[in-house]
Amino acid sequence: MSDIRPNQVLRKKRFGGELNEAEIRAFVRGVTDGSWADYQISALLMAICIHGMSDRETLALTLAMAKSGDTLDLSDIPGVKADKHSTGGVGDTTSLILVPLTAACGLKVAKMSGRGLGFTGGTLDKLESIPGLNVNLGVEEFKAIVRRVGCAIAGQTAELAPADKVLYALRDVTETVDCLPLVVSSILSKKLASGCDVVVLDVKTGSGAIMDTPEKSRKLAEDMVRIGNLSGRRFSALITDMDQPLGMYIGNALEVEEAIDVLAGRTGGKLRDVSLTLGAHMLRNAGIAPSVEAGVSMLEEKIASGEGLKKFAEMIAAQGGDARVCEDTNLLPKAARKIDLPSPGDGYIAAIRTSEVGNAARLLGAGRLRKEDAIDPAVGIVMQKRVGDFVRRGDPLLTLHANAHSDVAGAMTILGRAVTLSQEKVTPPELIHAVVE
Image 1 (cartoon, rainbow, N blue to C red):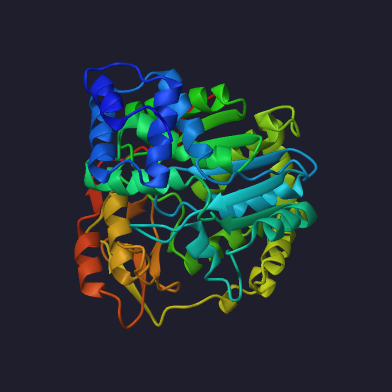
Image 2: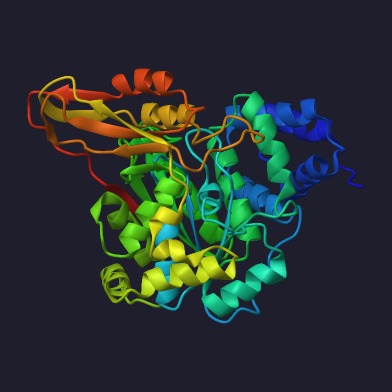
């Protein structure tokens, strides 16, 4: 038992004091073992939100949270182990592309992912739309697949950074979700507990992101990279645009289909560009490529040769899934109906409100509000146009993929206000706003 009492820590932070490592460890231990009451934890979260935390405090909180449960030891897997984390968006299918592509280049990618709350499913939900695929791997099985295939994507174990689960639930109901030190420690604690040497962060910015301006996103990226590197691992970050969906497909099986199309070389676009750039940073940071430009070239070669798609098929098969989807995407779940949303007039696409598109996808059944909500893997939205494109009246702006339970009317209402037209030519938004090393 710690001799540091909750009221001591609360009083110190209430008046803006800097907590020391012992006090922060006592707090995290109390969160994990239940010796701190919810109201005490909530009070400290609010004090942190009001007064902030120094780098020393944030690093101590991150490390204590990472050590609050099991940590994954990947040292028995040869080579550099890497991971990528996105702060979340719409049509953000980069993991399904860059994980097998970078593995085809010789990187070991041991990716622990979560399930999505909100717009669409998370990476695990997308993968589970592949018939038979298992994301609930034991630690030894997970490591064996990474060792043999070069990559695996699995769910985080309940014992990985358990303090974060308690803190996140309380942050959600105390309006402290967007407090930067708490965001940083939440994300980084799970990455450190996952055991990778190199982590590249994809920090989204725009209407469909947790940080809605480039300034807020840059501050988050800089804080995460700085604290991450202080932990002894190698971190870098890209700030990427979410003022329109990244990919053209939004859903679960739909996003798997688009990832396969990118890996097969059948489609390009912004999703491919961001995936290659993130993957190139992983290769450069791991020492496999001498530069980001060389890393992009390596990844492009793996698409052209078919090795990237082959690696994805190997990973699917190793996790019990039907790898034939890589050759025939018709084996993925399909929605019963397709409904076009026509353009109300002539003009240039001036804006696509990403959050509205995401909310519409959720109404169709592609996302969840509560953890226990079921997801329909087949439904979603396919974008037909991007910002800057010219459209004629009646041209399809997007296509809904719906099933019987889908709230098509609700989705159509939302989508009707999601797209703005202009008579003036529009410049598309920047794709990559900044790189933080």
